Length: 228
Image (cartoon, rainbow, N blue to C red; front, side):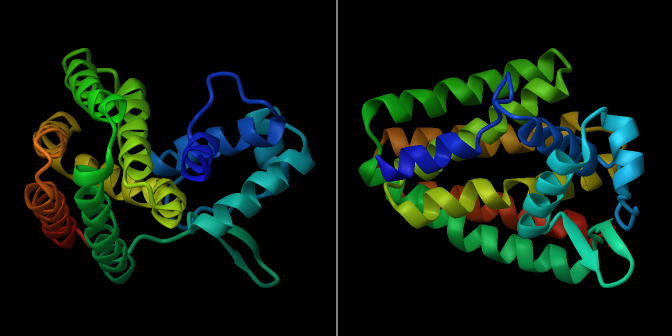
């Protein structure tokens, strides 16, 4: 129950329960999809005008993003969108390879029938979102896929960490898609992974579930190294 609650609290909500949550969601979208470029200053006054949200909710959202690593506070200078560089990307992908592959491995032995079906359904929804050219729905389904995977591992710490780092690797995903001229091709590569993971977990095969994640993360790391 603890793991499930941690996942649910980190998922996007269609109707944010607070202005701080709304500010957070808007900023996440703008930062991960590169509308707010790395290094961009995030002045409170300009954000208030652009988002139409008050100072206190924006401050709370910025603090949350700073904890996640998407925003940095520079002394006497203010808040900025964190930079993307080869070192930070390497650290993110190394961490993903260790943590997400372990979650997949555990899920292959611990997931219940509903979680397995959710993973299968979310994979199908990812494919449909690509066919419909609906990037927002794609991102939402992808976020849910990782949340279900994290919960299915039945490990409280994995359930907390995996959704928290999602936005960091989502931004790298958009960096790659921008460089290659679109998101559809790398989305299809991602869907091959989600299908492999869902199939392996359905068969209760921890080795294959773990390997599918590691191969995919390694390929994305190789991609980003070409651009950074």
